[in-house]
Length: 512
Length: 95
Image (cartoon, rainbow over all chains, first blue to last red; front, top):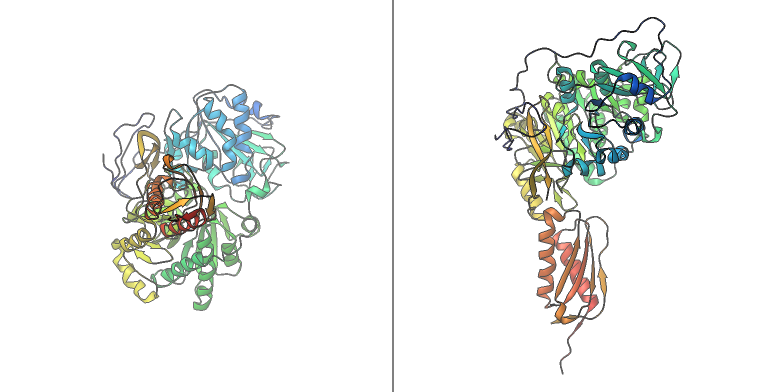
């Protein structure tokens, strides 16, 4: 079948159930009811705190063939996933599906368990480094399922991704299972991704390095969802969990991209009192935040809310009164973590509230403007954020699909060339976000507006930025670098990329 | 007609550059190019073509080329090749 972005999706793929090809962003209409976790009971004065991870695994009833989940708020400082997988492997449990909200480089430690058959399938937002290489090699018995943050919440809530046991790294946890991410030595801030796992997994195990007497307050994940608690020495390395406040880029190319992106926002028609915005954590996005702040001050405009993936520039704007509220699924730096702890206008939210397309309405639907990054964009505005120039998985879809679909104005920023590689090309290797949901592509050499948005093109004529057709951007890139050869791939499908609604937008084949 | 009479190098391994190392070989060995590049799949063929083209233009038919590419554009590859050749070669003296 050829899907809505022109990709060949096989009618059957071994290991993938219910294949539906992507048609367009909102064409798939779900039916039926949400799923739910196993019914739990906890009698008065019973004990949830166990002495080891092994005990918790035994108590959870984890068996061969089950699905386990983790959350990636500890980023590259995460100890929990590796620690738990080590215990599972030693217990001889096999054939597990690993379904974390995402994977970081630090999780490369689990590769031996993939070679030994402990983990035989993976469902994730993405992967990097050696893990990405392994998932692209087709070595696992089932293709990896790549989902956006909203798509994962959807899959969990509708039962497509059933979690048998969720392991939740808890920066603070009381003796009855109330959890938050803002106290203790391994703070991560928002617990947004883990909230969905805790609500829908049959068994929930909290792993904590800060066990406190009952009751813990504030509560991010409640006692009603938690079965077992295991205190450990450390759940993460604070240095890897959160960076200090990132310095604003001095790279002239990033600054120029940021300047064009800011001008595009200013003249788009959406830059007005009480607009809302989400920014990425890349260099150009952070610089754009600074430029935007200046423009907001100058024109006396304030934003109704900011959304993220939260970084320090947002917190500055919140504290200066330029943004009324920040909604937060994950924190990237220390200022953001401190803010969510102390500022009541900084609201924690679940991945479902953030981006799930199949609930009563995620907050991305209320978003006016989003700035997104890209690995490659093609002349149909389709975006790749998952595979690199060799066709290997090296990134994550994250909230890309979700915010592009939800926002009234989605802006993709990328340098026109990275090294020799053109970022605007004829056809991206892997489609993650469909071009229909991408409105503007900003590079340092020119800005292209999606022809579907002729209204925007008219507005931007006054912005004094180099507007051009996207084909022209591609031509400039090819003039410098030459036209790239296509990456040769085999028939074997190593991964499938779901659109946020559960349809298949592309497949990733092993490279030759 | 140029002959490669001594080892030479030009370029760096900074991004967007290429490090070319030429090593003389006996005439019967011909041209051998050893290429590493982060963009091998998309541009390996084109990088090879540029290297071969420069050698052909300079009339070199025996040399070992080690090319450590870091995403250089064709103009850079060409310039680094020319310099490496200049450093390695002696013009054939007639008579």
